[in-house]
Image (cartoon, rainbow over all chains, first blue to last red; front, side):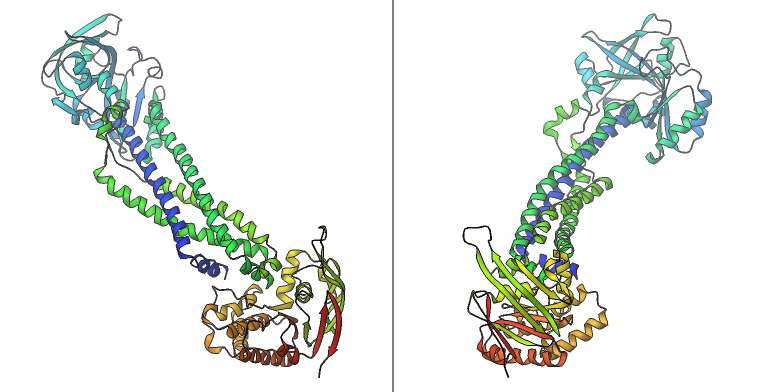
Length: 404
Length: 229
């Protein structure tokens, strides 16, 4: 009966109820869209970081991440490589030799990270091969090929087929240098990455280092991200003396962005819900004051205060229950509309690239966000109903009945 | 046997102000089971205040209201609400039906609060709508009914929970002559058949003429109390 009265009560003033329902729907839509947009932005960053460099899991010498020195190499990892190649949860893997050194041309020089890679294996793990702006990706043919980033190329005045010199320390601490020819120029959406990274064949780099088997990093990509922790512990068991890390542990900003999304979601939901609370309180208070006499009658004929209180709470919750799914549905529709075409932010591309974010953002409405919204609106409705409901139960039936 | 006993009832509004209003000044009254009683008096004489105090809607400033050997003036708010629900039926001057409920739902409402079974509710609703002659209007909402029909629904609602007595505050004030006669006939019949005690506050001579006992109040005191033939 309470539900029936509450339901009919909210349709007594259709315009007012529709306005509240639309406010709730609009509030939820705005939060859903805004957070889906930032979700898409962060995911774009994370995805690009994973695809350009990080992969899902990396294995290093335990000290390498703190002090990336040549000496902190992986050692003999043949058994580990055999196990990785047989593990069906692992989609692809690549072994890298990493050196920090300098690249120079006639025009200038720049400090860089040199990654020695096996081109075929690497292309299964990262997507630098798909980011070639000019020229070609590394292959087994040719002598000492190198690929460099667009920004670095501009800075050094290097073009395809230009000759560059890579200088670094070898395994014995001696300065060594090698002449390389630019085979291709890549362009990712991360200006910092493009400026600070070059890729050569691992065998060429190892030859210059005087150590044909040395490597510093194994990068793994897995089939199913839900298996990430499982694969990590399997790798840890297989290589107990090495450091095994997930992408979020390797790149602190990725973890920061991921946690930031959760915190931002809660804060933004909180702000919008706070605004909604006042709107709902205002409406429900009007509804209570308008029905002052009727509430007095209900109490006069025997409806106790608890029931009156819950009747008002149920009315508010019903308004939210109508508004929330509409908001979530419109949010889902608008996110879906942009999820294929993306939102084009090319006018801000320079700034976005500096942070490694794509100029095309594909908003993503996660189940977690929908869950947060549902919980948020539930709490909002309950909080917003308390004051009007308290007001209702405080009324004196006699004075309410006398009210014209 | 007395259903209601009012002992030295005083009611003062705004007692701490410079101009306190003495609405009742020591009312003593006994109402017996099955009475059809009218409380009459000029406007402002204290009729409605007395009715509200007897019905537990208001509290006396002094004195006791004894119903079923209990002094209801000492009850807490929620105890009073429960007491009203179980023992008292109200009929108001302006009907005061719940606008979002149909006639049937209005009548059924108190029984739902009392958690009566569906069969009990169904039987009682049909019995009452037949008694008040509204069988064909049970699915109408109050705004689809005339004043007289609404007041008949209000009477049926007041009777639904089989209360010990019904308090009717100027029940005919907004009704035309035909509706008044019809309503009084219904109430009188229910009074006789179901032995329900009716207490009216009224200035309406048509109600006064039908009452078996007329209590006259003036300036907050009982000035006359007579049994009519």
